[in-house]
Image (cartoon, rainbow, N blue to C red; front, side, top):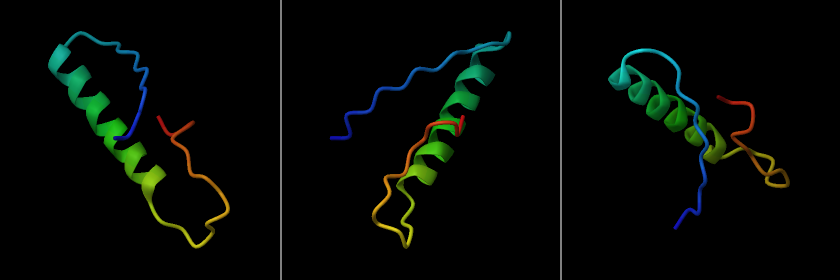
Length: 50
């Protein structure tokens, strides 16, 4: 269980493209946040990735 809260603001005309872009951006940011690094003392974050 992740316990994630995501606040996403949409803009544009086409609902399909807005949702597609939001899911893609969220997936990329989440992947970056969960990526393993050599420094285990820092906590990765999605802040500022969107």
